Image (cartoon, rainbow, N blue to C red):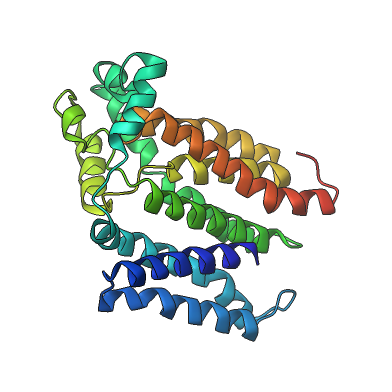
Length: 277
């Protein structure tokens, strides 16, 4: 499947980079291990089959997403010291006069910051919810959703490796200019972000990419669900800038990535089944 090709390609490229630079460590063996498991499942459960092995093939990338994400946090600093924050901030300044996250910071305080913090926390329930919901849908919808979200993550991880950045809230020249006031929801979300981010997860914005993928995918099977999700999804995407986690170019790249993943997977299923968009 397309996401498996993407993962195997990204893992192979990263493995080669560490071997060539001589900076490989024992923990980097998680890359070939994941590749072997993915290839085994692909052989054990060919496309079109059903049953437990097929579900294992679909769900394995969810585990790979988490393993690869946290591996990148320790791997990229070993591979290269350069960070893309200055370049991404320069793009913001070219179009907006300053980093967009800094410009909106004074206007996202108190209850509005709590609102965006709550929306930001919807990210995982949204895309995991889509995976669970797709299991109950007829046709090839489950395969398309799993493949699409996994593809978006794989390409996003490639972006992390090529353009590692910390984001405005962690980039020292910008972090000093930011203020953040809010209630318990703000503090709760901030704690999760600081403990959970890997330090290089900015370009592209996967919060934007995956949230947009969920929104677009939901419309093909239920316009009612689409309209229910519309505002929450827009708030999640707005929170990426409003909470100073991303630069404008991150969000744009995430939107392109999410739309591309949808076009290559779930939209193709809709078209084959004659569904409207």
